[in-house]
Amino acid sequence: MCGIVGYVGKKKAVPVLVEGLKQLEYRGYDSAGVSVIGSGIETVKATGKVAVLENKLGGNDFGSMVGIAHTRWATHGKPSDRNSHPHGDCSGKISLVHNGIIENYRELRDLLVAKEHKFSSDTDSEVVAHLIEEFAKKLKFQDAVLAALNEIRGTYGLAILNSDEPEKIYAARLGSPLLLGVGKNENIVASDASAIVKYTDKVVYLDDGEMAVVGSDSYEVVTIKNKKIQKKIDTLDWSIEQAQKQGFDHFMLKEIFEQPEAVSNAMLGRLLVKEGMANLGGLKDVDERLKGINRIIISSCGTSYYAGLIGEYMLEEFAGIPVEVEYASEFRYRSPVIDKNTAVLAISQSGETADTLAAIREAKSKGALALGIVNVVGSTIARETDAGVYNIAGPEIGVASTKAFTSQLTILALLTLYLGRQRGMSEATGKKIASELKKIPKYIEGILSQKNDIKKIAKKLDKYSNLLYLGRKYNFPIALEGALKIKEISYVHAEGYAAGEMKHGPIALIDKNFPSVFVVPKDSVYEKTISAIEEIKARGGKIIAIATEGDKEIAKLADEIIYIPKTLEMLTPLVAVVPLQLLAYYVGIGKGYDVDKPRNLAKSVTVE
Image (cartoon, rainbow, N blue to C red; front, side, top):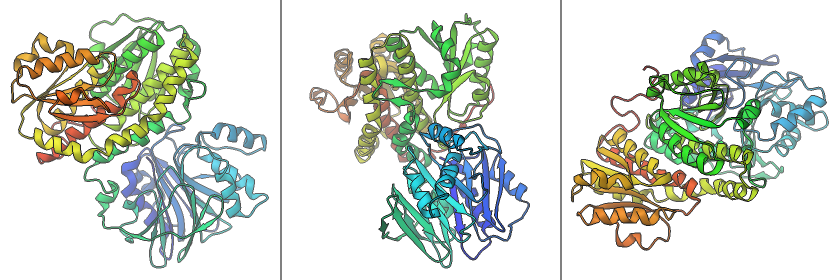
């Protein structure tokens, strides 16, 4: 999420930077900015797309041949000129751009304010510029940057200018991608290759804990402990579009593989494992009112609606709060009974879904507390709710939601911890949930490593026109989501059902040409789900099972098995959905469809 580009060489920097931002705009488009070194540091920022910044620059290149630029997907601070990158220090000599999240920015900011630093934005990123400035009072600039990096907790991709060193860019990485394009008499720093491939195919990938000092015809890489290292130069063989996709064939596949990062980002600074609690700063202003809430209505559409259904199970079981889940498209038409002790929670990736926005407005008109889980900072739903939590999943380009869904589930688990600990959840239970939630990104990585096996199963499904998806309890909504994904991507007719409902009608469809996909982890309803599998097997139906690692019984019944790690029952959906996403993806591409832009669908439904 967010895009970084920096240039130092013999060309005018501004045109290179703006072109780089255009190639990176798919990573963030709520604001953009550039800083170049001329007589001093010149900075121009604009809210909106890169074209707005380009118009604001008006062709002015400031005569500079070194600069940095950024296109933003907001995490801290709403989209605005003041929150746009680059950010500077008090002296005006330092400017930087940042991707990632500084987890300890509040405590660092308080320390710097006490030392009379003046802040100009609401972002976590600006803290880094002031921290470097503070260290630079006693250290050489490179040592000051390294000292600052050693004080930061969180993730970062950074490109930094210092007007006292007008022919250098400092670039550092920890958990957020950054690479160096090595050209002839010029070097380019970028967050991915799409900003580089036009100028050079030679790249150096920075690893976590490394910093590069970059000039026009040289570069040096050191660790953040200031140990020099030699880096291999790689050769790119990507087109610009492939670079944006970072080597993946489609944005959908890239976003499926970004889920470990998306889930981790949703937890950053929020999950308190030792305390068994969650710190949701976006709810701080309504914390007291939340304690008086006696009912929650979750309102959403599509994939977000299925996330809400899983949230209902979580919140009722572990926070003890009655929860209803409503299609936003129906919510305001049925005269919902709500009052000041009701919280209405809107879930929307875009934050612009027309039906969900209308539901929030209806809830507020009746005195309810309006909450949101959205991915786009500054979106309409984010602005109109009383409080909320951002996904921080980064831009999701593929129309079919993948990483936004798992980040929504992560936040619903955090919300369950947050409200549960308010209402009697034991510390032991909180620690158990928090500890297991932290492991989910690694679990997802393990599932993604099975992609070739899942692709083979998808190939076997190519010949079928109908599929039944079945699950129980927490995984009933995952059956619904699995069926939706394959409908969206491959245009195969699929139905999602609660496994217990199968014999109340859908079993009539079963024969050898109507396979069933079962989500059947080892959980509290495992035996019940096995019974449903037996009923389908007795009628000649084929079974594809999503099952827990080590389950030997399922091997006697299923024709195909995809194994997932054992985790807490409430967190199983976070891992069970991933193979279903991959299955839909591979069936779709096997049929030759454009899985990023399925027919008749839009990424954000902004009309009723």
